[in-house]
Length: 385
Image (cartoon, rainbow, N blue to C red):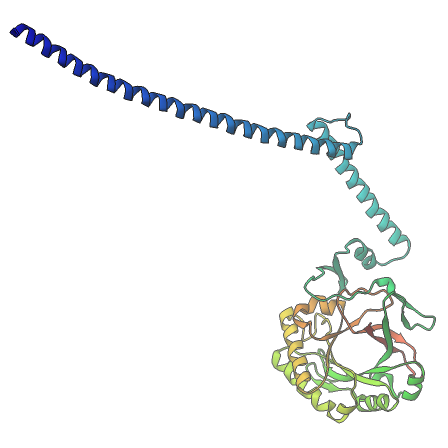
């Protein structure tokens, strides 16, 4: 074989090897693009599917909202053919608000007019208008206090009570409530025939034990502790006539130490009649006058005095009670701190205006009872169930 032929043969072999390598490379490249196209198509398919699902959900929600809106329109208008633009709806709302405001204003004015024409007091009128507050009249002014939801309430309505022909309080509500009639007496009532009192359907007596003077009285200086001259006679007389007997004491402390002193002195004075006391020992809290030695003390001060007083009574074996009117309880005391003690509310008349729990009610300061020659305080004790 000539040299020329050898070069030709070697050249063909090299070309064949290059062709084989090139073919292999082309096959790999073709496979890669094939797989890439498959991945791309799958991605497009998934996106299209996701879009379809999202569109379906949006369409379903839109249909649901449309149906709900249609139902609301039908409920409001009663006719799906009647529709309003947003501006028209806004205008109707403003008209309704204006009409409601005017109607409410007329209602309030009519109520005020009715109260004034019927001779009702300003306090009664305000209490009717502000039913969520306690309206307190003190010193010729009107004070508004929110009713405390954290303090236990009584279940009575104002109309649950009435006065009988002889001026005695009676319960006319629907619940099972037991009332016992009582009197509130002091040395000012003079000598009392307790047997006649008992025969006049009186079941208990709350007897004045004394108190600390908050101002000068009858030659006695403010700050002096006085004992009611008829304390022993009235307690023993009521007890022997078959009545339950309790006492009340007028608190006049101007410090924690004075409150403790008053409690100690009272306990000493009650020792001779301790066994006859079957009803509570009440501490009476009065709203002080501007010139009283107790004026200017805070709610926390008064609450502390009352707590100290009641705790001392408990330790001595007595049943404490807190006595006061609406102003006393609402303006002077923290009711939340006194939940455990019974309340005796002074509320003249049969119209109860006190939302919190109580167990005794003074409804008159000018009652008449057989055996007592002067006007006397009338009370009831209440038990429910």
